[in-house]
Amino acid sequence: MNYLAHAYQYLDKPLFMSGTAVPDMLSVVDRKVRVRSRNLKPLIDSSELEVAEIAAGIQQHLDDDRWFHATQVFNQLNLEFAQKMRQADPEDTSLRPRFLGHIIIELLLDARLAEIHPDLLDRYYEVLEQVDAEKVQQVINMASVCQTDQFVRFFEAFCRERFLYDYLDDHRLAYRLNQVMKRVGLPMFGDSVTELFPLIRRRVYECHEQLLTAEVKTD
Image (cartoon, rainbow, N blue to C red; front, side, top):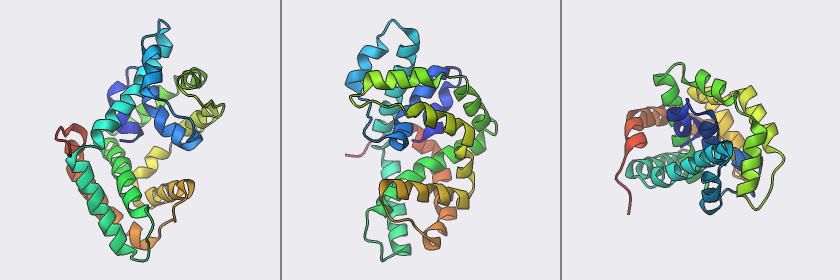
């Protein structure tokens, strides 16, 4: 899951909703900063309600990822897309096709939710802008061995740039995905892979309900 899929059911709980974005934001801000369930539990039980709400949102993200990445439909699509990308660029011997097949499912699931609910992205950003990013950063530093002072800056840029809208267009999606490739040290892809995006988008859109509700797990 990506930002919107984690958050769309919690628009009435700004602090909780912001917590669901934290692990994905930290993967950009500083990959060394990790929040673990064992560190979140005492925060979820905290008498400080804001801390408890944010921590519970972070835990929701971790729980979502655990079941989502274990579903048959996710793994089947990931394998299908990785194979198509490998065929489109046979000289690529890196881990990129598998990684890209994974992440494109999550981004296109957000795009599908945004298309089905036309006001959802606007509302999502409106709710985020209500949140005190300093408080979220405080909870992150309470739950992580490594500390960060860069989260607030990224949170504000995230709200300002609103790049989730880019997932609705194949060429802007390709640009964003190549930014991810660069960030994680994988080779960027070219037109032969981007040309697969309409087919991949159609497949994710066809399966979006299964992706959000699937209960059958892989072995």
